[in-house]
Image 1 (spheres, rainbow, N blue to C red):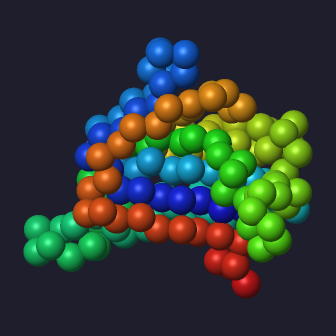
Image 2 (image 1 turned 135 degrees about the vertical axis):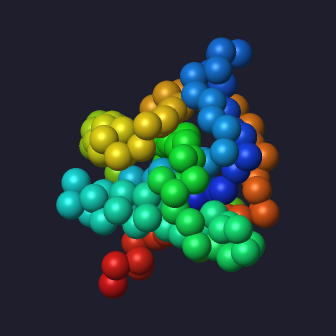
Amino acid sequence: MKLVIQRVTEASVTVDQKITGQIGKGLLVLIGVGERDTEKIADNYIRKLLNLRIFEDENGKTNLSLKDVNGELLLVSQFTLYANCRKGNRPSFIEAGAPEKAELLYDYIIAECRKQTPVVETGIFGAEMKVSLVNDGPFTILLDEHLFD
């Protein structure tokens, strides 16, 4: 699994010129599901994501989590996070999870995040999406398959 987490002041996803998800202060999370990912692996990523202390406290230190700042989540599936560009100039995506499996895990992540976060918005799995954001910082973190080695 790979997550690209961006601290934002606002973000939205549009499909066919219609906004499908929109948040204010919070985290935009691009989610890539790999072939070997499971719900147990997703649980580890969810726990890490929701507890990351990447929001500033009153002293300007990154000590606060999403919950501490009443932040919102925008979760967007993005299989291209598994692009392998080692050979040639055309990326390979063979390490990405099969669409059926990836959609199930994406839906699982959404459901689990909604249990712990009041505002969880989403894109549409497999759709051609336009993502807009104002990255706060900029502050971007990559969580990848080496996170729990």
